[in-house]
Image (tube, rainbow, N blue to C red):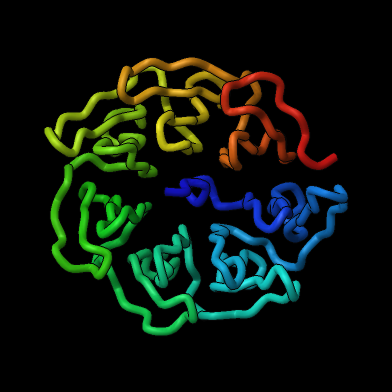
Length: 270
């Protein structure tokens, strides 16, 4: 699964172009051509960008957080729904999101039609994996089928942010000082990292990458299988995105790129 949405979905690479939201002055969204190096500023602040064959689906922060589709060929934006959406995730032909009015979880078709509610209680964050949805509430972590049926309790842990790596759910545990915690779905056991308080989190499918609030927001790589951890970047960072074999993150309101293995970060846009 693409976990860039967990970091705001502010960075997306598509058709040889890199899109980055302006998080400094919130003037719009940058689109940089990889071949020419030319950068243009698009109208609208694209959050929670999801790629599809017919364009990019996103929540526009300049237009009441409404659902939009951007056609990269025609360079046009089309409104799809008036619902203010947060944490937008495309899964097949459906779009899942938290409605910012009632904070409940919904889904609709990619046309914006057939909106249905998936969860009846306020949701802080969620992920969609194959036929299951995992979502965090104030009472604990829940799961249900992608249609909203078969709701079950996973844990009474109160999570901030959710990632799924194999059979392990990763989150910051609100009940336990926001420590980075790993829940084994097979056994129900939870292991926590005493020296890691994650801010922004992301994953390449094997490793977890997170900013550590205990160490000035610098970037750590964690192996949930072995429990090992290492700091790979000393910059204060936020909005961690993974684009291919590179990490793109914000630092002091500017975008930087760095290899997933660590090293020197360089500005993406100067």
